[in-house]
Image 1 (tube, rainbow over the protein chains, first blue to last red):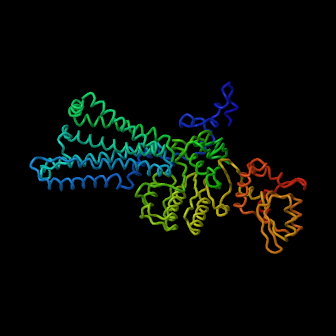
Image 2: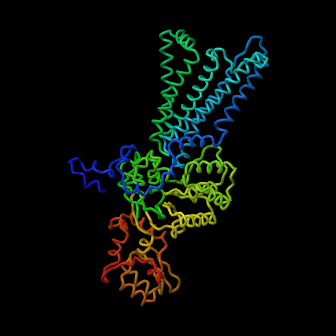
Length: 278
Length: 328
């Protein structure tokens, strides 16, 4: 504590040294550390840069490829097969559209929960900072979302080329979603996936930090907000204009809104995670 | 000696309890520490805060001279092996080791492989399906092979049988000799690790009770064995930790060090002196603390109070710090 003796001004003593202050944020206090220990640092070759550690988190998330790759693809393939079986049984003359393509999205809610509840504690054991873990995990989810979007687009193109598997049935090639071509489709799927992933992640983070009651309150709060929105729209008899808004917005507009929501949820996750304990 | 960890007035309060209360200590480079205390004493909380996995309510922590929170430079040089570590779903030990290799700059893959075969750990079974002992082995292997500059083992032996525990201690000592580093071992099996640890930190109820070298701490008590009469005569007015009699032979463990005059007395009385098991001492010190004995925190400065506890009938009250002397 050599710094104490050099403090000549009349500031309170508690502020005079880095050693006795409560340190809750990283950067400010870091500079006041004794120089002695820094000099004993090993050559920096041993410590990887933050960038490469974030990429390592992506690899960590992909160590088990089932979670982020095979299971979502398996889900969408099964959804397609089940939908086809139904279309075949219905045997309609006009084109049939189904919502089976949304199945993997719900899985991403669970992936988000697991990335937090199981991988976060492990990342702490790997001596990662929360920032490294969060950025790496979001990047891993984004890569996974892009793969899913690509698969969805390819499936849509396949349906287009084969006139709905030859039986006029469509799962991925939904007219409204494809309004802006494959780019709009990919954007919607990727944004939806990220939104679902981050929502699961956020709820799991809230749970870890504050427990079941907090999650319950958050869910109830969310339900109330939605209910209020529905109430207001109904009261103002604005449903037709709301629907029209979504219809004219087009897939790219929707993707933009979803991406915005994902950013909001992601920011919420990060703020919650920053002060989450192991 | 260089302090790699410097903790000042560390306190952690939860809504209704204080888990860690005004802890101040330093941890020196290249030493093995025993971090001891009963369940709920605050050991895990303290180690969590040192590795920035938990947050102090007040006080400061310096690791390698820096603040550890969100500090990759500092964190990447530490490894914390928890007793109840969680792993990602469907992870196998192989996945866990592959990940550890990514993040610990000094990871030694050959050493890891050696340990895997030593512990007979199945690599392809999901961690969920491992036995408790095998689960502990995963943590132990990561902690050893990571060769982090500071490694914390929080009761790493849960479910490990005696053979596996001995293996852990052996490998730890061998590797420590070749690659000196700082190791903090928290354990309830105190006598098992007594020969490993060079320094002892004991906490109880969130307070620091003892911060001493293992030898100094051991020097604070002694076991005397001999004829029951002589032993009885000797223990009068002393704090007795433990007594045992068989026929006319009796042994008593007494707290406090012996002065030179007393040592002569002991020799002439034909009593045999043996060092005290560390565990007995820790239990005694903890109990004494809880009973709120008149002395302030015994041994917080190892030895400084020891003289006063000897009783002052014999002159200088100089204490023997040399452990080899105590064994003669």
